Length: 347
Image (cartoon, rainbow, N blue to C red):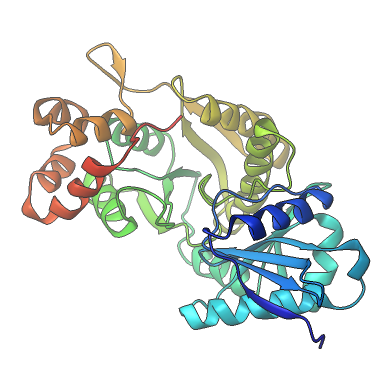
């Protein structure tokens, strides 16, 4: 154990953050935009010699000065961050690291979930965490042709409903995963409920929480990838590495996705999916989006209607189950959050 001090660095401490940024840059890392706790280690000359951060249940943005590598400082930073997480009530922790660092984190009690060779490794601090998730999924394995769909449904629209109906009509069992992360304007319990209500008429749908394993763009780490295209590709390839293991547990041989003519990010993601999934013997079907009034239906358009309190437009874009919820008093807190949002359109 070193004698160096570790403490939190607050967003208002611009000077320390600049020094942290310089330390990260020397390691080829850019400070992530999604952080809710940053710490630094200072030497006796008041220089920052190590750093690490948290976001949600993840640990990220590690760096140690080259003058102090080999002294066990990264181990101390990780231990500090884990204490912070435990104090928050987060015991199931995750991290993303470069391939070359995975062995080190393994020695600290982290276990590999999936990797993108040459780029990154996704790890957790539970030996059987992901395997336990797969074992639970396997109990829902259906007979005949099985397919899968993953959606955020922020919120559930007629476009989502059409996609589910189209996919379900083409298979015996459709495994529908709803992203569990609460990184959306509409919280997960509401999103899941609206998906459940909006698909209740489709008998062969099996609904699943994604858990922490299917990663959203909001929490995917971008800090050690060179540019936006590399981030999108890294996210897509990691998602596919995880999804392939999920598909094997469920016997899924088809994946359905909605066409994304208005989203460059999701469009590239779908392109990578269409190229890579067949290599794992999983067919990828990109379904044209449902339209209303000559325009594709998107969750962004629905959020715009909610923000403007345009109930007539909303009624044309969402199932009655979704419309009924948002016109009820129960939805008032979420509507207020949407009204206050600076930007409800996702690109």
